[in-house]
Length: 279
Image (cartoon, rainbow, N blue to C red; front, side, top):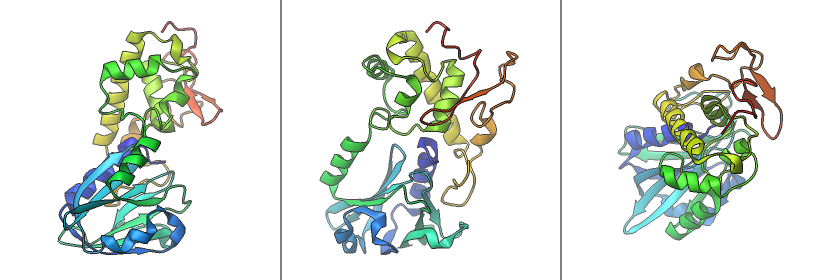
């Protein structure tokens, strides 16, 4: 479930609590949780956390030792969490990686992932660059509007799957795609190549607003998301359509929110987001 806002909340908490701390020990409970680089695990002992970055829905820890920097990338996937020691977990047996630190405001960081759709990867700089190129498209928070418009105009197909295509636009999942499209009054199945440039620019502005508001609220705690300190995200209280099937449209148009089952469930208003609306 964690998407871009949740990953950004995680990255910011890690920077605030662990930047400059030394990684004393990294224990891996099961080898298959490490996608790449398990043989380099011993290098990380004694390294210092010098940076935390977010790429799409993943969080990368940059760790420096002598003159070399290596990276531990945690994919949050559908159920992955990075948690400090005090944060409670429902099923402790699903903590697959434990990192012990000294010199920071926290002493432990745990990777909890019951369904294991995400993994940990260990990279040098070249490996991280290859990983980023292979897995992530543009970042919706930093891509310029004109570049976003050109990117969308060059694509075909339905709008919602494109917003969620991680190799095109990195970080948006089902929750925020639904919310962005409702606020932009665009049907999930609108064809991208039929959108006017002005409509795509409006979509861009709405995308930025929704994602930034969600980050400010600590993300959306739907099902199992918790920030590293154990707090829940409050943006779920601001969801207008996600999970609202059968409820009145927030725009008070007199219609009910529908649910369209395709690759992922789409929640939309058939009046406010009609396919026949000009765009």
